[in-house]
Length: 356
Image (cartoon, rainbow, N blue to C red):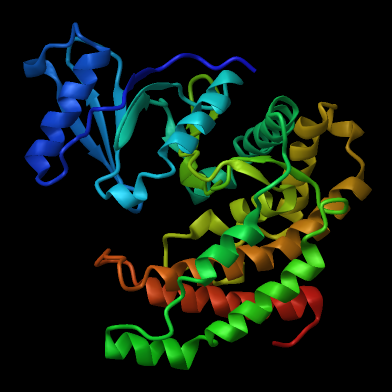
């Protein structure tokens, strides 16, 4: 699999001490790859940021192109940038995502993906979800075929690393009291993880493929005019369980809405999941939809349901590791973790017939 070349500026750092310095640094970086763009003509647009990073788009009124820039202000969060850039180049080489254009010490630039991020209505739209499911199937097959190895890291390793960061108590007394009342102890969460891993960490039964790693709807771009699908934000890409990636996609249909998080009526119904999985298997196996057998769909659905538990436990642990550093005034992260644990409890009983 040949990767397109990118410009590298290993000695260049975007100064993140002030907003004005960030913007000046981004403009300078854009001019390095588009020297014909005049500084006075460049307009910056800030996009919704991911945790621990800043995302800007740069364009001019004289050009139709937009250049995206991702900057990581905190040096300790910049360690995985090289892996993310490599993943982006891998996805772009198979036309699954935008091209990386340049790399610098604390960030990189890349193409803008035209279209709209999926939201709940689009994710269940009968004209859209078959394209999404089919494309994810093709992506899993193609990426796994061309990447040298799909062995190695997977979700259980990630959760174990995060589990080490789960605090025993929180700095805020009210938050600490709520955590102790509504959530199990760290030791209990570790036992839950061990139980799930012993049941599901079986690569011969649960297929491992090269995954995107964070297939929430907002990381899937739908271009209405061309009816094409692209994936963005590949920082979590790598080998993982096929059923886990699909379960993650379903669970995150409403992940940012606390009015809907944790409520099973806002997770796609099993009949929808069956239809979705049929289109997915058509893409994954490169066969017409009519050649996908109901038994194959049911087998994968059964695995996806079990990996729903892994996704939910992962969300609980993720929330706990960020309670003392996460600051989004309009989003109650502790409540998010509590809702996900309650959902985990219900699903574990329903799926495995085990009471916690």
